[in-house]
Length: 212
Image 1 (spheres, rainbow, N blue to C red):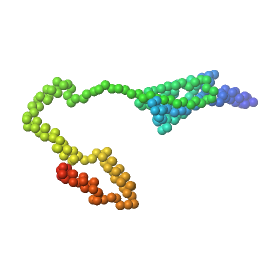
Image 2: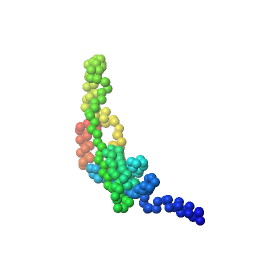
Image 3: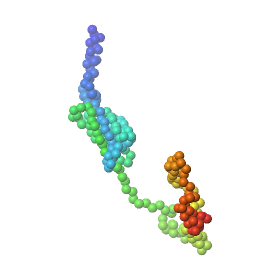
Image 4: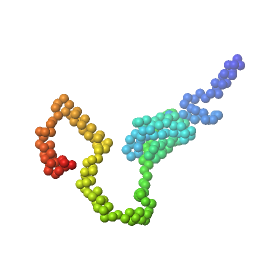
């Protein structure tokens, strides 16, 4: 009989209210499930991988690729929403909710910073640059060589020797694949019978670009 009495006393000390948590002895706080979306303030587009955490214990969650999140909190808690490149926002959980759940749509404004214009020089001051430039003592021959290297035809010839960069190679490959898909199952046209191709060939011979 004493054992049953002891078990009954222990069970009576456990709070039986559903959806509540105890912060201290005799103080019950309702648990609220917070669900919602984090969007951008300018276009209301879903903001993926934003951080939503409770300020009380610094625990939280992150939004998915669609900007959705869900996190439990206590009534009266403050939730902070943040993301890189956006202004941090916070909201509080009301204490007078009829149901233990809450839906939130939290917009975040862009955090833009305007930097002042900066100039980068190889010398610390203009005076130092002038001093170093005058010490070069360029001869007429060096000046003539510099003018030859700035010649438009010479620059064009050197430009033609430079290989393609990544963007040009990608565009050329995509054009080739698109052409193959377009003429799949049939013979592609031959440029030897194209009057436009012959006109370009004759113009290349006349202006000398074919030799270059």
